[in-house]
Image 1 (cartoon, rainbow, N blue to C red):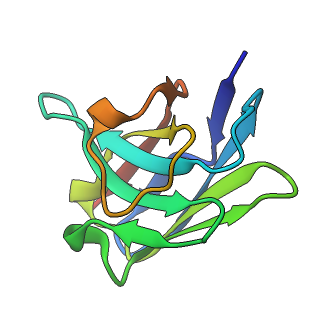
Image 2 (cartoon, one colour):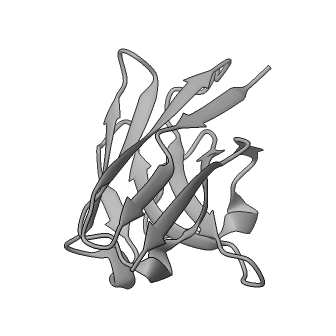
Image 3 (cartoon, rainbow, N blue to C red):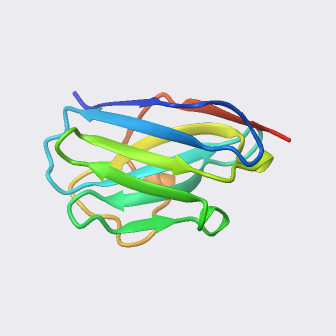
Length: 126
C-alpha cells in the first residue's frame, strides 16, 4: 500500500522560509514523478514543483521560480520542497503526490498523479 506523509507546514511571516518533507512508502516502481501541489480555499489544485526521482530533473511553476526548490533523497524515499521568500499568496494546503512508473517530462497536472498525501498547511501572513 502506497503511503505519502507530508510534514513541515506551519505559519510564517512574509519573507520567511519553510521546508516541506514528503515521506513515501510502499512504492514498487523505480522511476516516478513526485510532485508538490497546493490548493488554497476556493481555488483549483495547482502544481508547484515536480521531480523525476531517477534523473533528478525538476520543474517549478513560474510563480515559484527562484523561491522554491524541490529535491529528493532516494535512499530515504524522501522528497523536499524548500520554500523561501514566502508570500501571503503562497498560503495553501500543500500536497505530495506520485505519478508512478514514469518521469515527469515537464510540469504535469494533478489528474496525472495516482497517489496523494493528506497535506500540510502553510500559512503566510503579511
